[in-house]
Image (cartoon, rainbow, N blue to C red):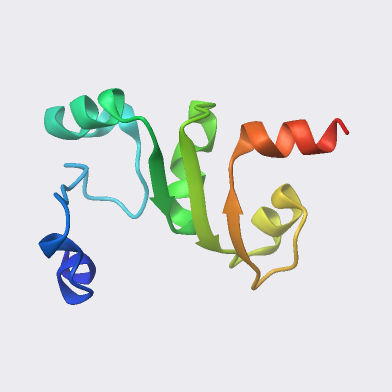
Length: 99
């Protein structure tokens, strides 16, 4: 929340906490407000490698992950170099691999 306030995001849109004190997002452990907003969202922008690690198993075409790849495991999973900046959606990635 501090980062959102620092960059002025809270003045542009509603920013909520997941309600789960962790460096990742786990929908089943998140608060009611977060789960309702998550369920109703048309698009979900997930920032950071930690959130990728928590949400990748959701297999949800609405999620777009924005992150810097910080470890070899995630770099290998995404097929990029460690240190790369990535926008990743598992459904788009799957369709690209099948071409």
